[in-house]
Image 1 (cartoon, helix red, strand yellow):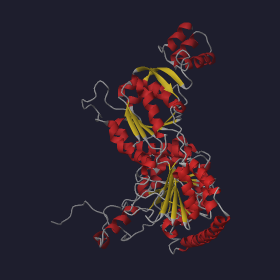
Image 2 (cartoon, one colour):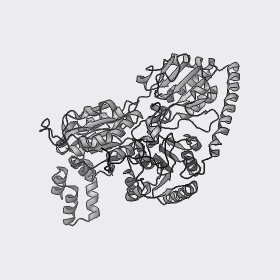
Image 3 (cartoon, rainbow, N blue to C red):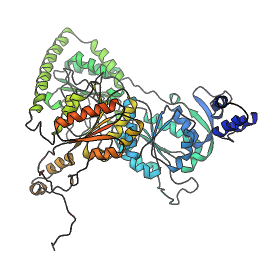
Image 4 (cartoon, rainbow, N blue to C red):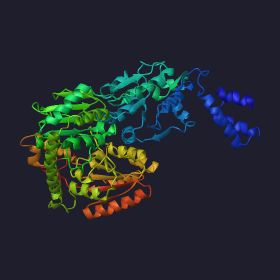
Length: 629
């Protein structure tokens, strides 16, 4: 037995061989497993280096693949999202004895990365996305771009197909400067120079990704490094995390408070930093203290209760004609030449993303801060200068905003009086309305559909329905993101909304839903077209010949029509097609039943095409031979 222990500790034999050989000596299987369990910390180096290592730091000896796995565990990773990669064999081997890591095989890198993004956004926990060399990396880069725009902390890894001994010889799947390909859409990227640097490279990737403002990072190394024997340090994330939570400049806070109480028509814009820092309640306190009407710019999450009387709807700044705007945590994406906040309007900008401050909008008070701390300090400063006269002015403004909100609420149901409300195929607002009526009060809505009627969900991130939307433009992420959200929040109902054009970019995530038993309801708004590009294209060309002739080259997805329910069944997910509102209601009931049984379900909702020039039978090009000269 002593010799067997020595062989196992020196890694001369595997765990399986150790147990089987020990059992042959007459030791029971249970006893052999118990002995193995007691020896495992020793073989992984968890005892440190002679007791001299500080807490959270230990020396590890093994293969580079094992060191990779050990550092992921130390970095707090539970789920690894990956597509099969031949040169990661030693990492896969390491997973056998490390149940702390769950490997989720994804059939395509893009939806797999979207799944990881959804998990991180919904859980606030780290993940890693793995691909095979450059060929896998380019498939994942669309979702890497989305993570970059949405400021989601994600780590991407793929090995270099070239070995360290053959690099530069134009080998199979080799590309020079592989790590630099992702430079514009990552916060940091690095090539480990030696096998023992694998854990250090992984640590730095997670540190940078999770240091605000968040964003994706990329790590790589030569394919042969994971099989090399290494002696290296494994360090927990807490030992390298700067824990960066910044308080604002106190003098700037005082200036902001004074401007706010002096303003006659102030407006509050909320953004995603509120959701990430769990500070939405403080934004509500600020709005209520000063009776601020609240709106939003483009975002991923719902960052304010949309049922609150101070909520005036998305992108409503123009209708409010403010004399002061305070932004809390919004990136303020600019799509027009003119600044979102006009030059004559005073602007207070509170967010941690200082690099984008002042680039377009002139800022009267910059408050670079973690918005949770920033709001806490601002609320304290305001409390100190709230005179009876100011409180009276605030109350008068509150009554005006309440009246505005009530009028807006009365106008919103007008959409139900649309003359096409009951038609088949359905108008998009009707589909959204029916889903909102069906959804649980605390449902999580993952949306990649350019549809109206989203206000009917009444999002409330303080205990009600929550939104996971799309900030960037790479399609195909909704299905994967919804699977990741469900993985992170298994007890909440998750409903995925996707346009047909977006859905076909990433349906493989349905297979993951079926395999992992993630009961997500997927609704595809199927109008057999790229409706958004259709409308933008025809609006871009005055006196469009496409409109005059009805010949649209770039947007019709019919002939043949795509049957999304049939596609879903191919991936192991039940589904059906709904042509009318009544069929949709019945389909939602069946979807609810399926998810209660732990099964995902897809509804192919047939939606009418909207926009100028669509004929009942749209024109499609033909490659058939003609008699024309």
